[in-house]
Image (tube, one colour):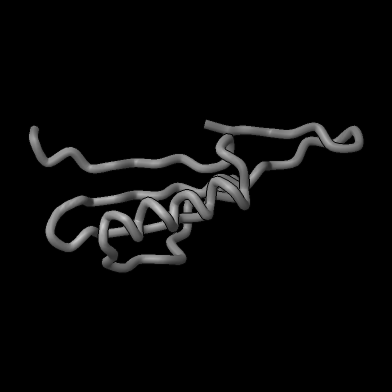
Length: 77
């Protein structure tokens, strides 16, 4: 999905931060930055679930909720 912002008469891609969380004993946490040409991973690590929630909130506060997409794995399927 392309999201553009009109700034001073020109269209600019708004960077999206894609966050993936894989819950479990060791919670997997990954962040990709999408600048319009596909996402590029820049953070992958194991955290506790509360650390993952806190880290995600930091992204929302800093970049805005419209620029952060959160994907949580549901192992119940």
